[in-house]
Amino acid sequence: MAHQPVGDSQTLTTGTGSTRVQFTVQSDTLRVVPISQNVHVAIGTTASATTSDYFVPAGTSATLSLGRVSSMDVSDES
Image (tube, one colour):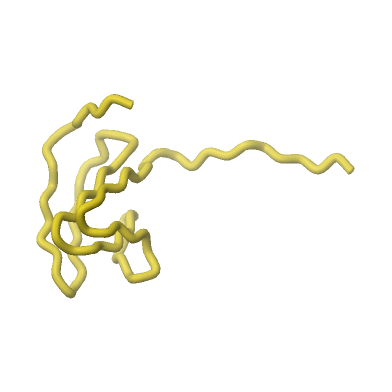
């Protein structure tokens, strides 16, 4: 999969409290790259991440889908 950046990157300074950023969605994915601290990520209109949300360890990256949830139709024909 080729990486095709869209728009400017956002840099957040994290600490012990919650850090939020609002952005215009320009792609179907979001890449999270915590440099020096582990982070928890929540996405939504009023999202506030807690320790039960998506975890990304420092020094790694995660690519999160911002697109529609898709599923396959499953039927039980017993």
